[in-house]
Image (tube, rainbow, N blue to C red):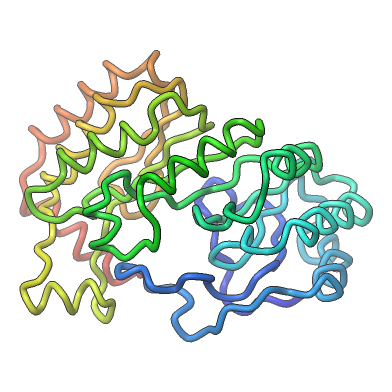
Length: 293
């Protein structure tokens, strides 16, 4: 099978089968990211994809789900994605759904009707790296789109009925900017119907543009306590009926719970976690996890 890099997926997708539809990242300019920097973006041909699909049973057995590979596998053209789903169901009958990472701009060229067709073809719970609903933060980390553009695309996906997940990059705004970032991100998500709000904590890795900006004094990293306070504010402001999850290795603790049913319990847990841990101890974990990225 063709994989231009190591398998990359959220922790809860590790039992899936994997299939590459794009190579590298269609944007590849996020200042915090360490992935795909040595790869030129390329879309896989349908011939490559079909060849790889035929090999899925050999490498992954009979998976119930396929998680597309590439930083944003949904940068692939609509016709290719639909043909990919058709071929997956033809050659791997066990597959019930297809997911993968996506960027907001992966949906610019896809209509509501096309997204409806993708849902009917088995695409489900696409993992969209929204990261923030604050234009200041989006510009600071160079995501390549605005909050208004993100909202427009999320509303389109919502209207299609295609299930999706959004990510919040906790701490991306930097020192003393967490509350604003949290409130504006919750505002972006308001009245949308995502399956899950997933969070990961920003880890500024040596060698990244964000790290170099920090060395020059152009960016000041949030403290670990500030990140926790920001998470608290995000949860407090969320109005969605959804699942809140932060099981990424970058997080200081891991939870998965329903909102609003378990919202008060989660807020209480976060507050107690803040009160029960000092900054020095929390920072030790951040320094440890930095070496893993």
